[in-house]
Image (tube, rainbow, N blue to C red; front, side, top):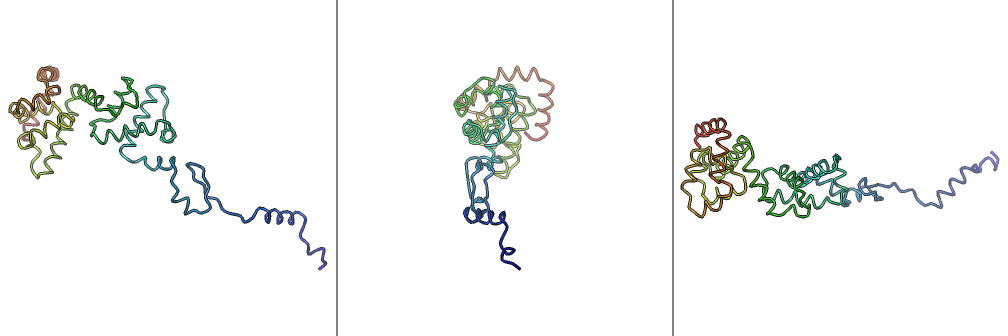
Length: 248
């Protein structure tokens, strides 16, 4: 074999020269959320950026509430459906998440209905986490919601209370402390529908003291609920029978 035949071709020599000049070839690992590159896969694995953090929080209760409110807001104001990726990239992400966390903290009885009320009444997003707005919405909501939904939520509250002290849910109005029941009513966990439809609820209402009644008077206004009962007399009588047969 001649010396000429042992020399690499011009193309191969050029490729080798470029490789020497560019240094060793390093495999790059890229974060799909922020685009940052890493030499090691392990570094990419532990890397946390704000877009990645937001995507990782999507199953948190407060974030789910926040995304629903965000999507409802844009459907109402722009008729523009939004994906979760849109939400993560939004400049209002943190504001909506604060709202979602607020709903979890105060135990909102229907966060979707509450956020739609805020949107309808054009409340500023930075004011959504105020107790004044929630109390205003809750008063309206409790006075207008359907009997069946109200009773279902209230019975669940009675069941939760009963499980804590190992007694029957039907003993809620008889054994639960009156201050606790007042608090449940103020939070919406126990509906005035339940109070007026359960025989033991009416008995409880007749026996609380003046200060306790004043505390809940706006929500259990007898005149308002008499009018509602008269408008839904048939459903009310049926529900009263069911609750009475259940021991309430």
